[in-house]
Image (cartoon, rainbow, N blue to C red; front, side):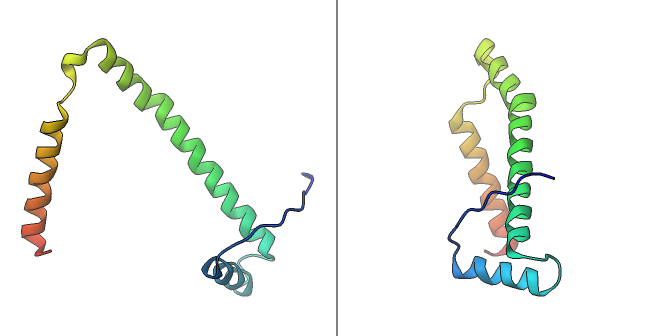
Length: 94
């Protein structure tokens, strides 16, 4: 079994309610289990993000550094985003 280290942390009132309701529902046996589950989820998210950066973002950046002519100018990207936003806003009425 992994050694357990005790640590004191501060949480917001909303987070405390979430922890308490998670324990009260029986989903978790203790507040510590809720916090450990949250930390495992955070570790997994960070691992996935680092993997994505390594496998996808870095190769694209390296390719663009070697072939800058393939890059799309920022002005063009933002013009396209503004156009798409305007179209969606018109369709949804927001």
